[in-house]
Image (cartoon, rainbow, N blue to C red; front, side, top):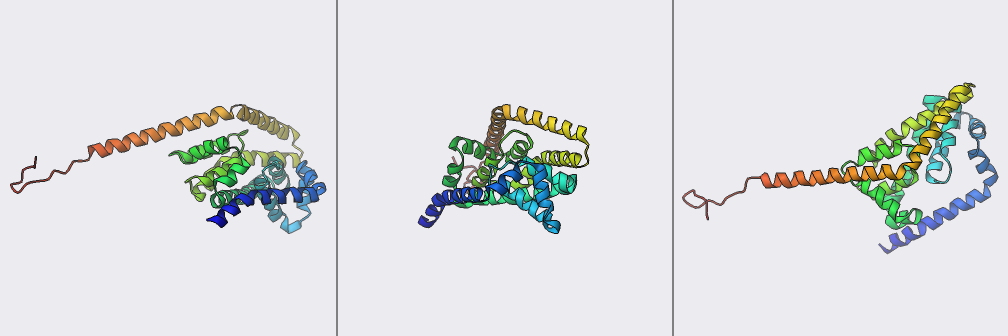
Length: 257
């Protein structure tokens, strides 16, 4: 237990320090890549047959290193591989990164996650993850643009939600946005600028609306989860009261009083 506690307290500073060192050492290579879909496309394309694996690694990295923007790699995936292959590779890479975050939270526990995010934010997501409608809640929060996704993987790791359920419903929620980004990239690659511009405008509008309403959306999901839990408790109490009470019978077959 003592060794695990030391690991928990030391893991985040060590991980964060390693990220900072790598970012500083390779800053001239990293930051230009993630600031332009075209640069990222050219760099990944230079890997030849290994380009799909390299792209998946980039997507996993941007989930783990959560201050790296995820939209640019998604657009680059469509630009480089087309809509469907780019979307599938993005989802696969993101799932690898999400699994890593989920497992890190489950193994290292609450102190590790609280070192990354505020206690209030973590507790709100944990309430959703532990609710009877956890799967629906996670699908919706991953579906709606503008709601920060970084914290969700870690908070889910602290909850009773299983990894397979988390991956299935979070992936279903992510899929429309990722497909839209890949379609934007493919449209740019084929010089269909009107379609690319329309998709970009729609993405910006949805992001702004989701960002502005994020607190209301999360509060509504929490209320829905609480009402569901209350109805479930009432139903359980009702069933327990309806069970026939066993009466002890005397030797003559009549109930004892």
